[in-house]
Image (cartoon, rainbow, N blue to C red; front, side, top):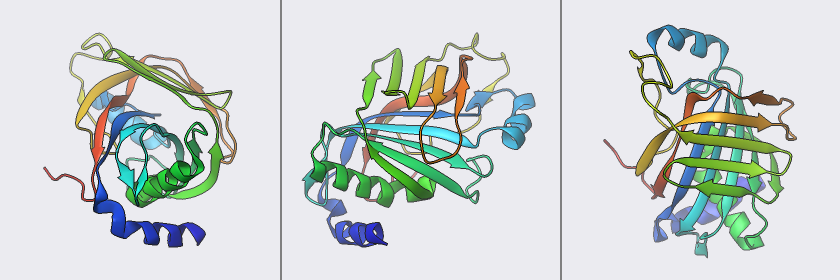
Length: 217
């Protein structure tokens, strides 16, 4: 309940500025694949995801968020492509930011992406290494989380008849299909851990510009 009150306090100030930066998303299911893979992923995979933000500009509730790094690990009871599936998440915020920035950043993520995160069961201040360029992106949190992604190479990274299956969870101003070469989560809170090393197209990296009202197509 404490954070519901915090978010309510912040909401009138959301219009103050657009939060922009870099973003990485990896899922345990393909976002680009062939028809034969769709039903398998939907029924047996896709219940885990990693979302990470490297904020470069903007503010929330009068607090400048530039330089704040946030990662969320999300686990659902079923594939996260199902909006109705119940989900839990753990949040990680880089302590290089100030305490005020971390509080405002947590409130921003909860307010804007609460439906994606579901029930937040843990919040941790831990150093986050976020790297990003045209050809690759990665997020690393000590021994907790390691996601390495490179630009997908089509058609060699998938079958010739593959096509886009799922959009990113959040609106991106520019996005690149990512082939995840390694993802490992061994962190607290979610009672699960996983490791994949396969080079499958399971995510995106790109840039975002988050305003109070998401853009419409």
